[in-house]
Image (cartoon, rainbow, N blue to C red; front, side, top):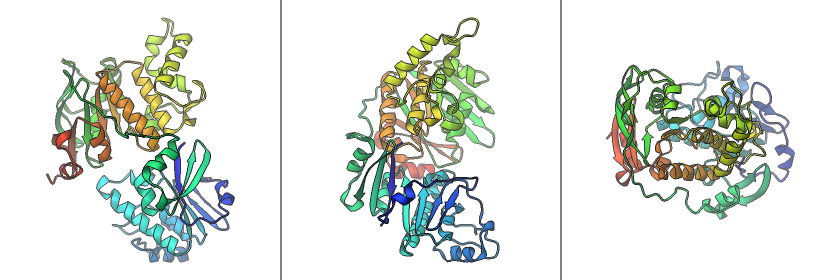
Length: 432
């Protein structure tokens, strides 16, 4: 799993910390004589000692009630990072801040990052060492003094942030040069393969219409809560729309449900790959063939093992899935390779339309580049691609047209040659 660890002024004896257990127990917090690890799943402020609450109250831009320990509205909404500051340890580990930032509206994301970094700066000024773990390149060079790179569970090296650039860091993380993050494409869209007309879901999104063409990558942009995922769930039949029409290759689909949509050539790479896209306890092959069991099985319901092995091996090779074996349990793969397993599952069915919902969330930069190129290859083969992303550079780098939603309403469609981040943000906030 490719990870960049950001280590400001780390003590020479870091090795005494890196082998310590992280996130044991239900609290997700491990603390010992001189270090604290802040992980997922921490509780609220109410269990803190009064002295620690007062210390928290003194932190910049973090307000809590010293008597109850409850956070006050309008400030950093998640206690997890702040709780790392309640200790007097010399080393604080902060891991994957996007776990809690992703749960908040996009327009607050930068605000939260700024506040988090102010807290980190305060802790650093107090003499603590901070180990900050993230996949986000812009954060590396914003807060790190030194950068430690790990690749596939191995220590690669520690580098001076001021003397390292993004291109070199990416090369160290993925062990190769990435010349083009986004593939160069020449789009030649064909006939319409999917039409949505006045689709609505009461209380979720209003009448929405769009056309998707063969060979086109159609982006969907908007702030968190704009209704992008909800719209795709309704199209795929996970939820029931209140009204409107879904037309696939000229044929109206009545009462969309997942099985019917799959049979009509729709694939859906969901936003939550571990919760909805994979069966984590099953192996790679079983996850790949799970949507094609009818085709791969005998009349008595037994799977043709040879055919399953052959087709799975073919997709492992084509998609460059890094796995020890087709029998490896899928939860043991990296996020990028898990995403490729989901893609292999849908490609085995040869769909005409593939919906990608946040396909690169939580995966490293090398895997992101591979996903981008795979998506572009699928479009070049004539697949109609719907591409949802909260990252505007991703949408701008991948899509031919971009549909923008705002609070469940259609805000507009913009051709890629006319699109800028400023225009997309204006449309997404309703200011355009």
